[in-house]
Image 1 (cartoon, protein in one colour):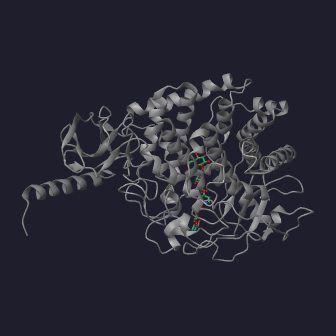
Image 2 (image 1 turned 180 degrees about the horizontal axis):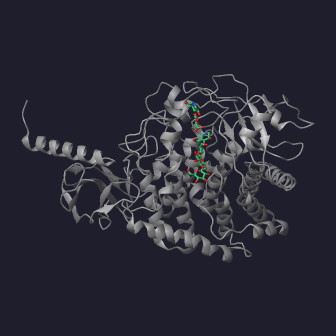
Image 3 (image 1 turned 180 degrees about the vertical axis):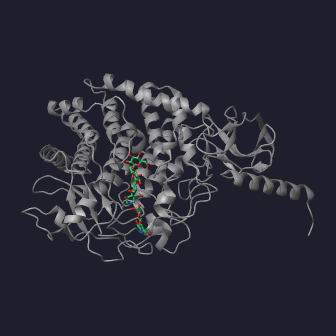
Length: 578
Ligand code: G3I
Ligand code: 9MR
């Protein structure tokens, strides 16, 4: 064995540094978007707890020739953990190629600078939805090694006692096949489908020309409609079946009584499936989605015959039901006290509906022009709305009203968007990772990756309204966050990067015997309450570091359609705008 003193000394130094650092929290390393950068875009890497001097270099990945030298920033104390960082900004370097960054004793793996650098990521995140399809086989020519038989057929589903009506008493068998599995579990929830579908339909409405050229290799590819709409239609048809034809109300979910085990393959267990209790949030979300879908699918009448009409009819009926039942919260605990079998799957229980009224009214108003919806918009305008989440859909309505330049509302609502966008864009300058994500510790909640992605969407909306590039740059920064420029050093999208998440809480991936997880799925990300929920071991427990790439960590490492959807929007929007 030949001893290489220089390398060994360097290794020792790294080891000592790592030890010192892990005593603090997080790991000493360089983190960055692990895929790469656009030639004209901002290019940043972040040194965590490590650099002894201020110089950094950009080298050609194969020849190791130095192409760029720069100075790291002064140390920055993170506000979301004890980590201290220094930022390497090499934005002035614009030549396409494959490179590494070297600083102190660290060297990064290779990354790219090139046009369309996020294309594959953008496509994969959308294709992730195809892998969640419930009731059809995933064929090898589309699914590759993740091909599998159809999951739950859902063509014989029981009406749960909580959802019984005269015309559909408890135990009635209905059919509601298809749709996407919600997350790592095998159930289908209307509330969570609502925000997911609104986000994806908005992606289309914001970038129609871009999506017209985007194929993702699914069975419908080439049918004359964009694949984004083809994929959305698969879940839309399931949603339509969740409306009770008797009264227009919409069931909260289609579910097992309790979660299947982690080793169950899709559809393998034959437990009874139920549609459970109608609700105001579910019905209004459904109304918003179907109203927006009526607009969108109306532009492809040849491919989607009759779909737009069915959607609009369904939307109006749902609206009318909600008018009659404006306060039907989904309270699973209360329901279980009066109805059997008990249901213990995801609740998505929401109790405040102003945001759902606002969103449904906005979409119905934009699609129909009917003044009665405008009244409800006005009555529910909020001066300080929150970022979208499954229980707060206000901004989806606001985005649509601005997108369509609604004469009655756009001018009034625009300042709200820009105020929120400015707060996010301003946060970039003081952030230890140079990103909007983490402006507040409360960003690191269950599904925090969707917070980052939804901040990105908000910034893209501000960019579309103003064409001010600071918003686009900040949005792209949050894409970098998801792809590795974060305190964990993970790329949160499966199948990408040199340090991708691998052990997602996802039953199909956990049960298929294939090493690699299903690709294109976004891990939930750091969640500072995770340990309390799933009782896993977390090496680091500060807000931005509480993350574990282990299957049991459903509170930090599950995947979900409402997290993938904003990632689809953001990655594709960055591709479309760069
Ligand atoms: O509403 C409170 C808020 O008032 C409080 O300030 C905050 C502090 O932590 O908590 C808020 O409640 C949180 C709630 O989400 C709303 O954001 C809960 O703590 C948090 O535990 C809850 O997490 C949800 C989780 O289910 C557990 O119910 C996630 O948002 C939701 O995405 C997740 O969804 C699950 C489905 O139930 C089942 N399928 C998988 C899916 C993804 O994990
Ligand atoms: O797999 C379930 C996941 O989809 C949910 O987000 C999570 C919280 O509701 O629950 C998971 O299921 C767990 C259940 O709650 C408790 N027993 C262990 C299950 C996961 O193995």
